[in-house]
Picture 1 (cartoon, rainbow, N blue to C red):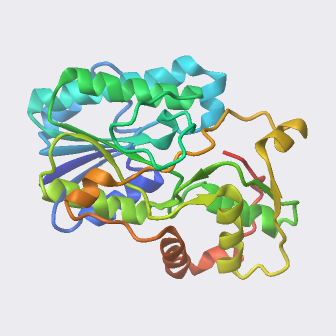
Picture 2: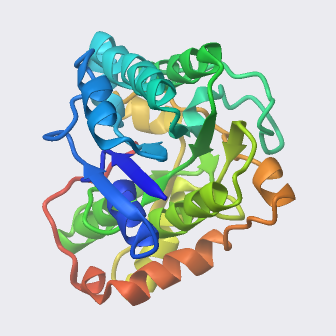
Length: 298
């Protein structure tokens, strides 16, 4: 296949480039090659490159930035998805668009299936949900893949921020009342390629590592794998953090995704703890991480 990857300079985009090669011709497009807020950019690029498939990873994922500027969030995450979908249809390329667990309100008590009603709580989730709806309205050959709590090599994510805070000796407090599934970019990339190889039917898919965790659980396991024995993590609630001054975006308290449709195709992702351990094994430099990044709730 000739696969074009938008947002190829992000942690998922980089993992996808590795997962596709060497079997496929990969066209890696970071923001310098494709600005998805430019109405004609995708059309011109796709017409020139003629991809067989496009994996659309480009997005504004900084939830704080989305809250500060919802118009920009919608321009990138909703408008950008629509522009890429229109350009795909023009060249008859299959689209795989990446979405998020934050399209749900978190009121569920069991994992969300792909057809569960969506209703986002924050600007990021609303912008991604609108992108999903615009893609669906076009009715093309498109797969929307929701994932959650993504981490990978070479990017800023929850794992690197936890390690940075611990290395700097800052207090570590993480919530117990926000639950989802930490997901490895490497595992997600491999599953996305598998979806393309199997020519999966169009529609919505969930792809996350198996199992659930709170932010507190994830932080504790991260520190354990890093061998940072002296770092202690305090459990907290979202309400307590907000009372203490945290002013981040509202998050769904329970946004676990059920990989129902992918599992029916024989695609399964490993348990999140095993994948996190594999991530540390691939990147031993993480054990010595001591960045200046503050702890975060995002």
